[in-house]
Image 1 (cartoon, rainbow, N blue to C red):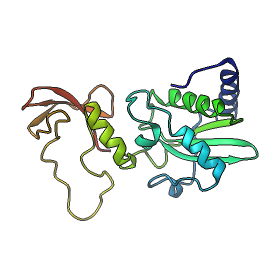
Image 2: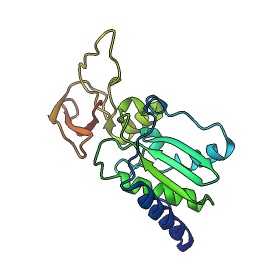
Image 3: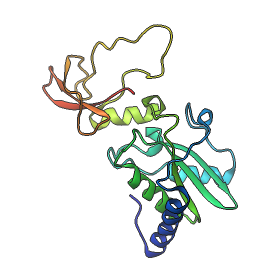
Image 4: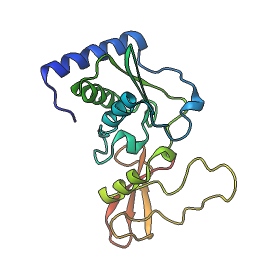
Length: 204
């Protein structure tokens, strides 16, 4: 989480107030086609800099991941009116999204960006397909089994999950204990080889 100096906090509060005034709850309808697949990286230097800073913000629920790793960071635009960042929650009502917004505001204002607005979009819906390979590797190292296949596969062979691999001993001899784990996007598993419990990030 970004440290809060009085000056940074004042600018972040101003951005948050403008965000709430202009965008209500912050959920806006954007062109779905522009956000459907992996988020396109900005090409303009100022936007690349803003993206790089926003991309360092950690996921409050799984702090080993950044919002870029998770695929929540969808767009960064910079123009004369300021900086606009678009985030897609992992699911509607995600309790971490407000913290992500505040941390993005703080990170960008701490680096000198002014008039920062963070918008949320629910269309297209977030999917585990947007997670980066690096993010999935971080999950496994953290003790969480990453998604096992792509959610977006609609044609061709249907993936059959033989088992969720234990992130500790790599055994496929595991069983689901509960469909819901520590958060709604994870399920709770037990390894029958090493007997350790672990969370599995559900495919969706």
